[in-house]
Length: 179
Image (cartoon, rainbow, N blue to C red; front, side, top):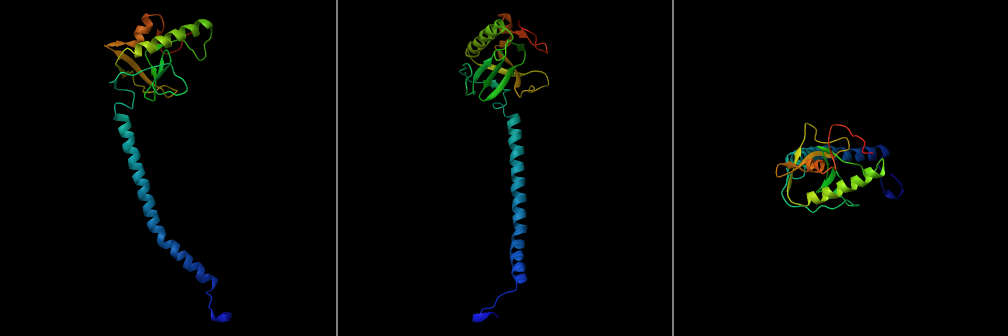
């Protein structure tokens, strides 16, 4: 007993009592954490499956509505980067059957000028109406994370149209100089 008639528990008693309270909640806390983690994993798996097989977000389905393309600026949602790269509803796509002159890092003035023409012509072609995006080969993406697709309208590749107009080359598997 302490002065004033109040008793005080030994420090060891306080320690045991504190641990007892914490230990009681640990089992329930762990179960809740495991259930939360399992639920999150299940949601992630389901979301991934939906993302793979959902036709619109994967850039592998038809563009069922007419889109309005412009030259890309700071916001890249549906626009044209250059003659062979576009953004469609937030998905970056490399037109897989062609190669066009570079705009961002041209090796000569002629390459830049032709690259601008290819980009502007692609904007016009894409704005002419509905098209379909088709995967090519067994690769879904390139090394930069762009979806690899062929743009088809009325059974014809828009890339082939750019080739016919002298604004692109058929993709051979490697870049070739434009200068």
